[in-house]
Amino acid sequence: MATLPLWQYIVVTLALAVTSLLSLASSTIMIILVNRDLSKIYHRILLCVSLSNAIFSLLKIVQPFMLPEDRVEGRPLAMGNDMTCSLSGFIYTTSATATACYTAFISINFLLQLKYKWTEEMVVKRIEPFYHSVTIIYIVGVSGFAWVMESYNPLSLVGICYISEYPDGCINEDDVECERGGAISAAIGRMGSVSVLIIAIVGFVCTYMLHRTVKQTLSRGMRHAMTTSAMVQQQQERKRTVTRQCVLYCL
Image 1 (cartoon, rainbow, N blue to C red):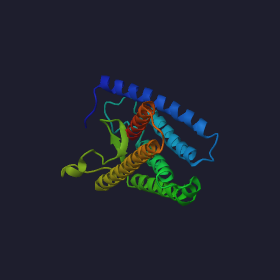
Image 2 (image 1 turned 180 degrees about the vertical axis):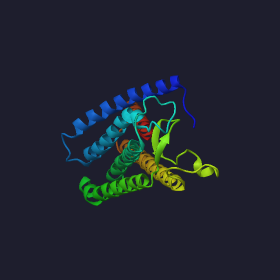
Image 3 (image 1 turned 45 degrees about the vertical axis):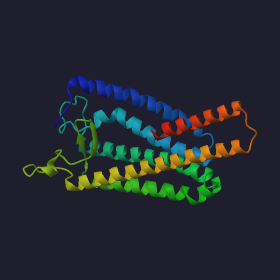
Image 4 (image 1 turned 90 degrees about the horizontal axis):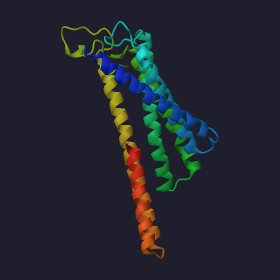
């Protein structure tokens, strides 16, 4: 089983801890700010994104300790067992997927309101309950099924517990018997990867459509106004700002 040299392990662990602490602090601040007024759907979506990201960041800090010490090599902080590994894997998949789902929901919400002229009440009544229900049922269902099938196992090279067979690669080796997971783990993993890819594509497409809608709105506004060179320059700068914001959001 491939492992990192000790010095690389220390560098990676410290880097993850520092970045995770910063992410956790940012998410906590966001939770405090949006929690002041949850009457707006945008604030509720941000709360879901921040909560799931805070859980994900906290997990990355404690995950090195949750690896099963009898199944990994070169991980001196590992002091867990199969149960802690499954727990960390479950939290990892649910929090990461929830973050992706609700990040995409931000784009969907703005696209419906700006391009298709939905009111916030329409989004709240027609989309929000359905989106929450499907997201929670799918994430908990798939992650729970992976736990029941013993599909959460350590990936020593990256230092996490995730959906995988154990020993790693046993499904491709005739002379190696899978102790946990097996072919079902590969199937669950592929399904999870495809679902996250679909969510990312939906978020990207909605953001791109939102970007085009904003630019078209700004252009129409200029055509119906008495323009000067200064106004044209200001309009172009606003378009560039919108483009930068959309690109950064997608990244």
